[in-house]
Length: 356
Image (cartoon, rainbow, N blue to C red):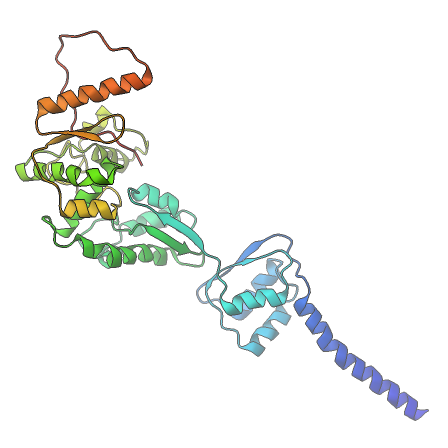
């Protein structure tokens, strides 16, 4: 009898010792409680204990204590990032993502012709608006871009696709953008007729004037020639930029009132280049600004069918403007106006292109 009791006890202990690891294995591999996909942020300075508690609070795992025991046994080193967790993910799958650093990235595309307000909207999910505008005027970030004298980061962002996640600090993201500019764009501004920053500004004006890469050297040439002879640039996109910089964020075509606005960005009101770029220029626009096609032309206006007509004289420009207006009336089905003896107002120089 005693021998039977001893055997029973031994069997019970053996069974328990077998069931305990089996139970742990089952808890580790079984489907988790998460019912819909979520993200877990491992931010700078997060500890394993904090993340385990966070996972339990978010309903990703059932037991923070069990996760902590595993993490300590494996000496888990957390990798900062954003982790996408699928519904029903087991504790084993969650732990595997963290151990491998399987970070979820979002591709954010910054394109040529984008200006400060469009960059801010593109980054709004990663950089809060108030912080964005503070960083946009950061001297440290301007210095990192390679232009310490720049008053803002306008034009100092490289057009590219950036892989971002929500565990990044806003300043890290902005630094990523300007460092890409420093490495990829800044060297291309050297060697032109103008200083590098002026080349960047001129490139931004050309970028905003046309969608056609083949026109960029001619448009840059018109502005370069005007700079040479001391003639105002009268660039429509700068009048729009002056509107936005004044707080009027209507993103529409330039109006006559915009050209009359007394503002340091409005090249109808000031001589020379504006104080900063007005957008991100493309590589083609930068090349055009470095080597503008300077000829006799001083004027250009849209054709209405794509592209621009150029002219060296105001009288030729007026004919091109009339042709542009006639084309617009034709497209809208508006009959030609009756001839008038009244003298028409001298048209503006640049084209009405796009308001971004």
